[in-house]
Image 1 (cartoon, rainbow, N blue to C red):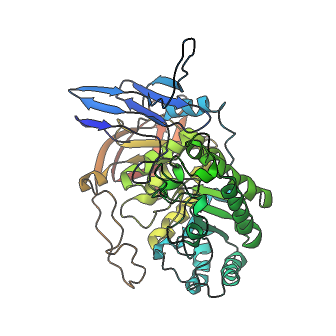
Image 2 (cartoon, rainbow, N blue to C red):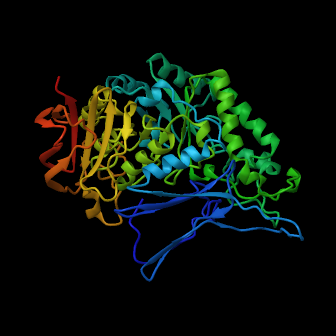
Image 3 (cartoon, rainbow, N blue to C red):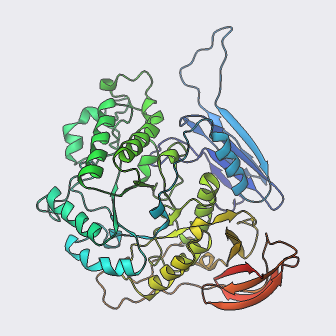
Length: 521
């Protein structure tokens, strides 16, 4: 989400592009203070289309472009294009995304409901990058439990190669036996265990790529596609992933998967002659089948399996969402955290859990942005310090991700930016200034002077700009004939009593204000 500049031109291709990113939501929305117009493609599988947006000479053009390939229309024939929708609305993208989600229901399987621990904080080993040491983790488990963390993710670095998905022999000399010992230690502490992996792709140096070149997606010229994608339409690939998931769940006894990398959003067309495709785009259309097989195989052996879907900085593919039960903001800069959470709430429901993994890692009010908008705080911070402790305690007391997001403010035009969550008969308001706007293009800096600082005893915390607000905020959604008690729940500070027929409050704050509003009986 961003303001359109005076000059802008983007094709918004929905397939896999040259830098191995693609997919997403075939949906664009343009709005101002008065009204908005959204365009969306509807269907039961990914479409090889463009949603171009252009700003030129003071006007904006947008559309859906479909490239018709190798099709001859004879007399009497007809050409059927993709189904599409035009959604006219007021305020921001939330309402048209909800309408889009409803319009897609006839085409998609039912979205999966989240498991209980999807609403609980997690900690992952990515704070050590790929260099985590298995022997260091058991000593952290009690601290994680004390902080209210429910799960440990063994992130990138546990396996020997992307694509082989066998334990790294340097970290786990006895292979599966050592890996399972670590998982068992974590389980014995009362915590869940997930692992990170990349379905559908392999490193070029992996034994998978060497052993099964016939499984890989090929270009028209017969060369292996640069993504080293395993063709999801090829039955041996589907069977391999079913067996892999079965091993993960029944042998490793895992509780969840973190499916990661932007490549998993899509697949290029496959010209591998061994696959006998009637249409090279069968690979592109079949990525949802891969997600379906992963989910259905996993729940067969563990009905409470958690599947997190992270597309590494880009929006998810709508056709994969039915086979996941935890959303994630997916590596945003700090300015995008609240809009990503709001996007998922619109698509999946106002009480759907959306994880933010950079709490306590990025500089700035990341915990505050996450908790106040109904997200789930997670962290890969190796400094489990007082900042993490304070906000995880607040989340334990106010697990707003379980509440209902109410769309009462325009995220682009209401300032301070505002969000409201309803739980039982209580309302929780979050107001934010935008201190990150002072950073210019660089809106994602880490808390400490080195990226994760896991080897620094006394790390030096990075300065982050502040932005103050003093004035009146409006608490929308209250009943007019009631009085409400207002408390700043972050600082446990009484803010007074207001009337529902005049729901305004004079405030002054830096960066954020988090309010609990309870009816006076």
